[in-house]
Image (cartoon, rainbow, N blue to C red; front, side, top):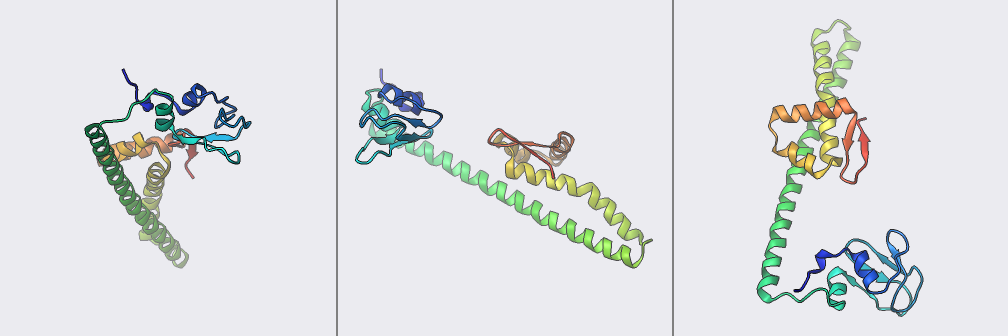
Length: 195
């Protein structure tokens, strides 16, 4: 039974081809014998030694090693359609994130402008009740807006999706949680603190 290339990590395929892995994304070339001349990531590899043509991706290498088979026309068409649907879904998600971030950025600017106006009013009249009420409102809203912006800019995909699909109450709970823990886990495994 044939196995597709996605069943293997590129580093494993390179080792099967005779490459010696040297660190996270470097390897010795089995074709030209160059030391640490291959660079690779999760998808592609290339030997940078002059005159060496050892390069490709996980599928081409798996095919060369006899670990993958060429897809039939129907399988290739189905795979292409699946990829196109996934790309369309990713594009739609990106549009949602951008729209939400734009709306929050506008709200953020409005709150900052309102705060500036309140400070101007208080300089003119320190007892201005409207200005004090505006500052109370701004102080209650601004941290949540900033937390939501941080989540939509740097948060994990799961958290971004959850925020976009959530109702107003759940979004409020999520931003409160971000403020309580002091930041968000990021899409690349780090943690960014709220400003």
